[in-house]
Amino acid sequence: MNPIQTGKNLVASWQQGYEEGKETVGKIAEETALVLEKSDNLINNGHYTTDDKLQYYQNIDEYNDKVLHGIETSALEDYAYMGSRLIIGDPLSYDELKSETMGIIKKQEDKFRLEGGRLGYFNNYDNILEFDFYMEQKKLFIRNGIDWVNMTDADAVNFSKSLNQGKDGPLSLRLQYGLGLSRNKANKIAHTSCKSGTIYYTLGMNGADTGSYSHFFAENVKKGHLKGSNAFFNSSTTKIVSEYGFKTKTIYNYDDFLNGKGGAYGETRIRVNSEKPYSHSMPAYKSNRSKKRYIKDISYRGNKLSSKLVYEKDSRQGKKEYFQYFQYLDKK
Image (tube, rainbow, N blue to C red):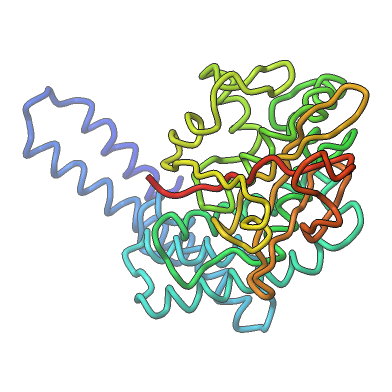
């Protein structure tokens, strides 16, 4: 019989045998149990620590072993290492933390800049989840004012790709796997989700704590802001974004929009002249490199430079699609 386990059992019985109020005896029993637990882990696992912290020491050991042997670590492993150091009471210094974090972010930026460009990459739900994890990290840093983390042009493009409304596309997969909706129902909702997807995109690119799209959709349906059958808006955009700490600002002048006035990310709303005219929402972003305004439709239009050759000021120019407004966010 394991002598350490026997000791644990005795201590457990000892603790149960005393009435409430025997504080001194109880404290001795508790401390004895901790010593036995730590001793057990030292004998069997090489670390004098409690059961609840043992896994964190093992995470650190495995990580250090990979680094020692030149094995590349994943972002999840990097974060697990930093978190484990914090939990065991040996946190990284500020400079170490900043260096490690910048390294992790850069590693993921490079990965998704390459992988996100592959045709159909976001038609795989596992890839969507991995990208969401990366975006959630960035959003967290941005919310907390960490100025050495920002959204890139590749993020702007890939985020919209991960929300594409196509049949069995990324937005439908998010609803199928994230909420357990049937394929037909998810495809139907995705088809009419241009505005909800665009507002989710805009909030996300501004660092809002929205969670996954399936969470965002379900929460706002529950609150009555969105219709569960088609993602149409019951509430104004202003009301919805206010719950995430933002307010809306709107530009109606097309030239101001083209010249980059307003926020870096927002909703471009256009009017489509067809047999049954309708309005359509698309994400828009300002390039960090060129400072020009681009649209990245989550429907079929793709990634285009917003110009008068694409969307005119109004229908009198004879264009099928014309500009209505650009709406962006400011913190409240």
